[in-house]
Length: 394
Image (cartoon, rainbow, N blue to C red; front, side, top):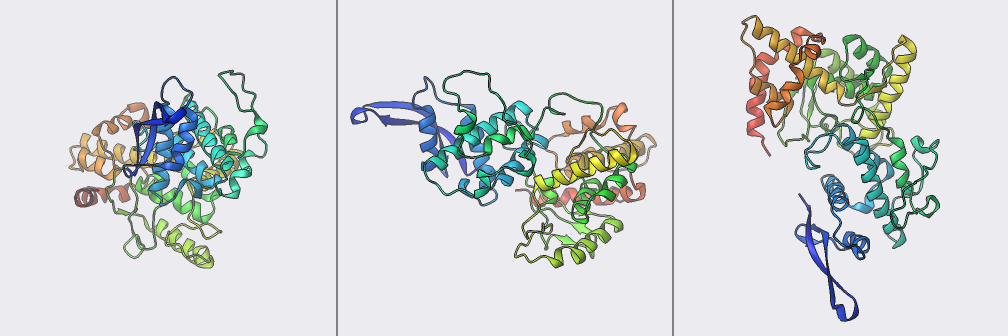
């Protein structure tokens, strides 16, 4: 990774006679000067070096670097997308790669709020959105902090609005499992959700259902990586670094073509990304998350359902559960089918242990495979995809 954490000695005091050991961030092996100015001030009076906040900041910096951005380039929406991705899917270079808890997200918000307040105080030019509230923040009230650990920053002393991002999130499936949380979708729910989504987000949603792509992978499609003539799509970003080409059904090919003709071709943009917003910029994780939330409210009202949250990851889980159900049924009937290794390569999993989440009877047997004829193609295609993955490692 571009950014790493290591120890350093910071000289200070009269004639630099005092050297304080602290954790600092290094960029390509060299101290990241401007970032470390902030970290030095945060650690100078500490009895021991900071730990978790420094590593969390390093994770955020690497997230920026992977998108060719520097810390001062970030917008409020970008920071929100980063937090959403941590909360929903997790990042391979953030801890064990699993989704972070609500408490952890609040820690990240505090770390980033202090960073950008520090940058604003030192006169660094920041995007104007950091000084404004996102639409999701408009109705938020300032929380009262009852903790008294040293100097507590009061609500009117923040120089940016980043600290309010913690209020956009709430404890949900990552902390307290709830019965009405949609881990995966039934065919009826898939149709209802897709009907309520604008064509751009409908394409994104259905791609995750039919291919099992992670949201970040779907959003990474470029004009060159979508081959509608052959009904194939290839993400340019994957969690493991492997490249996978997936088939999509004819119905989704038609939706993609409609999106191109009715939406993308009418937007002025220099971007090569396939999914583009009205502003000509690539669709973000946060925008997709907001579209799902809007659809959830509509379908609950329309059908009398009580779905508490539409998880952006659930389309991928639906694909995995349906495909695993089909595979196990074939095996029970003594019919040759793809192997567990093929399955893991197709899902871009690092470990076979991930399969166990889809082997429980009370999970798999409740999921009706969608378009059985479509899934049968994976008997042939998954083996080819496995070879492709091995060729494209890294």
